[in-house]
Image (cartoon, chains in turn blue, orange, green, yellow):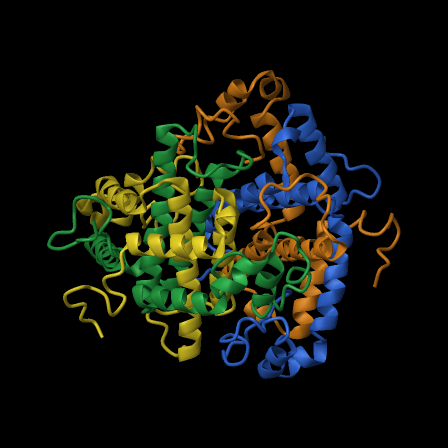
Length: 154
Length: 154
Length: 154
Length: 154
């Protein structure tokens, strides 16, 4: 069950979105669960999993990168909740007829256009300006926060 | 920017989680955004994107599979929001030191053990029973809903 | 039916946001939990509760108003999850120094200005137009969906 | 600004959940929006607003109580997003036929039973033990985190 054929590198390294899509489709079909997997059912299931993911972090205050000091069991739990979100996301995309692999590559390119490297590096203010279009409805957010309103891929 | 080297199948078909992880890491480094990418910052950004995803579906009532009748622009928008969730999920995993590809394969196997095919197919009641451990804290949820409390990968 | 007079106990009808704020503050102080109640901790706890709320609805498909056919225990569970969201929301507001009662009255007035009755009633198209400013970043959403992009208080 | 005097109007201090419920019902009726306000539509709208709330906090790192240093406009924006969550929560409860005021008072009492003062104060470990039932499905969460798995009203 571990062989991913051809290119499979280590364990999870070669896992493609397409692999996951197929696994999820098989899983649902075998269990006769297709009837439950409507777009909004899956979306709410995704929200539920995001809630469980948040619960892991909720009472911790700020958490450093790499999660130093976390026990192995807790990290394992985290991996499971991250996976649940991923699995529902892949399934939701499939059921909606969205090619997630294609969409995500396109989005990465869009992000690269939207946040050009030199503008983002020059200063926080410039970075903020670069994102003002996106944040135009967040009137109180776009222009003034010292930490920058947008430092991500939105 | 489209070449995915060797095995690249169509467009998005061969996209691996590892590819996305690297793209995100490069993207952040080039823009000097690593300082913003702490686990809880990324988690909240993920929640924000899930909110945007939900907004697409919020006034639609039930939506059939394949989204018949949706305009191309709307589907494109959906693809972008699904992608945003995915990108933050991949980035959050990386920053937490979780190998998402490995974790998700493991979770799929756990799900297969937790929801054996024959139990899930036999009846909704049986399926519910099979998941009762998981739902033990949802006291009012586990036993009685006619549509089954759990038809997913939780 | 409006009199909340003296004790305002009895039913839930006279419950004010201020009452809840005080109950939550007392509760936390008595248990020495103030140290855990930072804004982002509470926000993530709120997200966790919204996840639990979503889980109640996730496999149900469309649900009619009034929840006909739901068992009493399930409705009770729903009331608890709705309450959890409310309690964290009230607590988060308090910890952020936001007067939620004042803010919500102001927001209701803003909504009334933003969505004037005659515009909203005349047609979906007009309603959509009325909300186009708000949705300016949802490019694929604002102008074309037949069901209207915005039928709520945003 | 704090006096709520006789009628409890004026400011936000006397705002009851019942007041908000009625405002929302009137608002929807006047705009002919009842048809859009199904339980799951409102739930997804709530999730959307929680996403907007999260966006305010997403790039900020840890935020101290009282939000020192935040600009007035940003706090105002925060108040609006908190209000949006509240309004959809109140509306969702109403449409589901749940008396939110009654439910929340009951939940506060349940919390008081579940987390007795002396147990919660004595030590974090004890507090965690007290909540172990609730967290029984969060196997890696309940017993070992140094900051306590549960310091809230769940």
